[in-house]
Image (cartoon, rainbow, N blue to C red; front, side, top):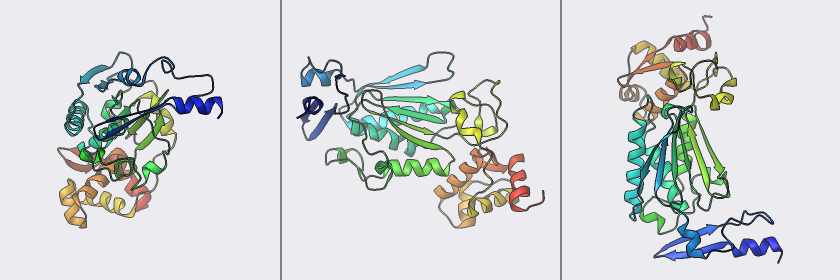
Length: 308
């Protein structure tokens, strides 16, 4: 067995907590770069280095430190997930945009796979970006995790979450339908960083203005998302989204329920279509209803009715 293989075997630490099988996996270390502390500390000491309390960092500006809220760990994982999801949703409400609660909860539920080792939730871009990081065992196959049915959930996990491999596929579908992105990356030494961002495409980028204004109203935005906006506004919508845009124009003022009845689709589908159009700048939200914007009229005249 090679020196590296011996180290990989040496630093795979396992313990059983009731029916919970926790794994601390340091197999990603490089030859000669041992995990700090691992050579001198016992398994229990290593595990005790990790806090299971959650930190929520609210970034109102990159010119100052984020406001940090600490959520104490609960032995009841179902209750802990609920508390953390609700607190995140509440903190996002100070901004102009809030992710749907089921999406936030689906993101938070993935902390259970990391055994709640150092969970951090960062709220950025006036609530339009959520970044969740941990220092658990990580995700080795990041493409498979986006497919329905792929999961590492065991019988213990299923006491607290569904555990059927639907979480990330649902979140990615939401991001795609809303014109945003979902990225899954390795953390620095171990663990995972998941980023969900709803940043719409738009023109006329102005880098001289202040960041963190409402990007769905064609205002400036956080400079760390600049690369996403190099493309012009998309020149195509799905057939139904085009019909929805026309319906908003005809009705003047319409909500998801009315739209669902009009098109004989679910309210959730109607909501996603309206939200996608809003993030593209084609409709504007007012008290839950949507109205057409100048950009929306321009899109209709240019790409649907062809009057320009």
